[in-house]
Image (cartoon, rainbow, N blue to C red; front, top):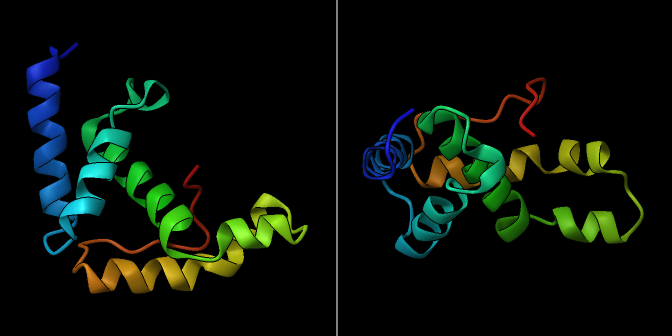
Length: 104
């Protein structure tokens, strides 16, 4: 198991590689989220990807509004895929969300 400083560095490198043009405030929130306990056992690149998708979903789409309107989680996620990919594209992401991919 990697020690904390090397995981911190690996997460920073994965974040920079994934989102070269991400806004600082979003990058910092994603970096922090990538250290969440439920992502701890995952490789840094996967933790960063999952933290990125979750951050964009909640901060830059109408996902939470859809949930409030009564849509279930899967339906709400389906309806915001294009919004997530638009943000990823704006940030020059090296990967986009595949609607058929499990990203939880």
